[in-house]
Image (spheres, rainbow, N blue to C red):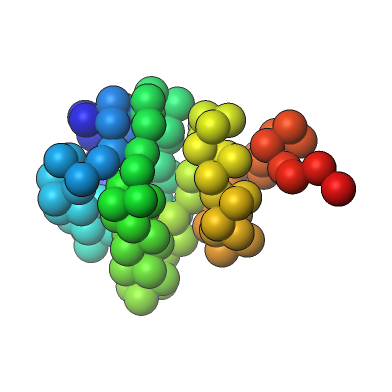
Length: 107
């Protein structure tokens, strides 16, 4: 996993999982604490995430809300969009541009 950027935008790449969660949490919390306004997480380079990685994202979302910021996800890969829909987290998290239609459950 790698994270690069500053307190306004971070690019997250590789795998966000149990092995990388502690480093990711530290980087996200530092960015939230040092900035103002929206914090954009660009996920276009993210290969995968597991439940722990998703928990890190949700923790950063909650922390951002506590300090008056908003966490915004950008470039969420389709397989991860499906997970957000399945867990209904797409209703809680800000997702730039919304979700692609094919990721939504069919009725």
